[in-house]
Length: 166
Image (cartoon, rainbow, N blue to C red; front, top):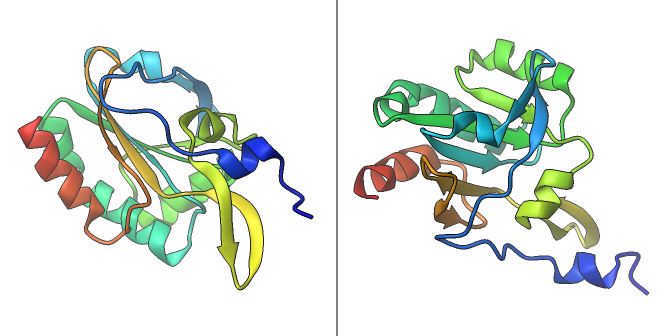
């Protein structure tokens, strides 16, 4: 018997291109509330990742940060979102010298809303976890592109190249 609800087992990313990006308000690494709607007028790359200071997540965050100025040149803000605490994000930013925003979704409500909190398996055990995913949102708050179950390495460069085309 599974410990997961039917909703947990069926949760998938259902948001698609053209959908309104669900708004949210979460704390950044400094404990300041940040809302998606704060960035109307700019494009937003919203990427969900499982955990600060793990190999894949560090690779992804550092690559987004390394390309930060190129994203800014396209009027684009980068926001990373994970269930880690504000303190963990603050340490991660300092340790990796990250330039972009990290938000704490410690209740995993935004992850649920975006469909990225899903049942995962690791060493035969099932658990609810974040599926690495990215949403590109236009200046009016509409989703331009969805990347599901992405690989961390070179993902930022791919998003940047695609952003230039859309």
